[in-house]
Length: 293
Image (cartoon, rainbow, N blue to C red; front, top):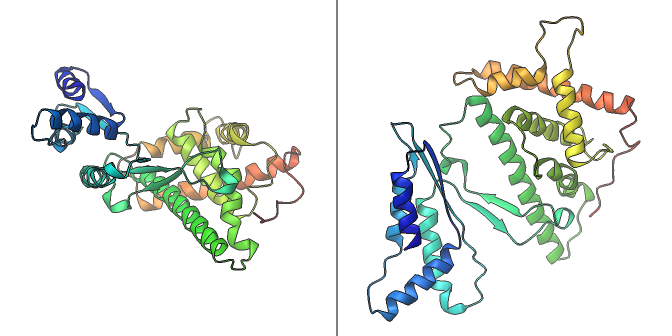
């Protein structure tokens, strides 16, 4: 009864934004099923999930309701596998987005983060995102998908004892350096996240991601500080720093493709200048790391 009561309480709440988190969905499902079986009553758990999703969204009165289902699929009982699979398939069919936290870790990134598998772009509702933020999100997702595909190919070659060129694993190796820039407990603004994503992509292309001596948040802080302070003309008080420009376009609902491309080129240029500054400050290794895993 607890999820149902929580839903009713949320519906009566006058707050504008409500976050509903349903933890241990499968455990609740099986316990509820057991109770209904003991009472010889029909059991239809999907009704509650459907009702939750029907109340999820952004409504005309400005109120938003976000629902998050947490599902632990590591069931050790063969008895529940069929019911578990059917329930998961139903929840996926009514969800806007699915994030799968797999227990399988990439060897070079073990301990940093779970492997995230997202639904294809076509199923992700992103109408609330501005054009620039949507483009940054797409770029990051492409990078994560490439990393996942690279890891799967590496595992396949290893299983069949096939020879592979170390260069084929460059993305897996680079992930050891760029994942800590994405996975941390520090809250970054949207514009700061956009600059970090651009830095990662450019550093992978330039093959310099492994050369930086600072790691994780230390490197992010250096990058954000540089983006916030860098100006073409130090004496021009009217010149807007890059971070402020990115913040501006992040909020533009009608940003054109040309405007987005111009800002991205400016970010790439500042990222390269940041690399030069770190070299001058002695914060770069003389050589990049070898691609061996």
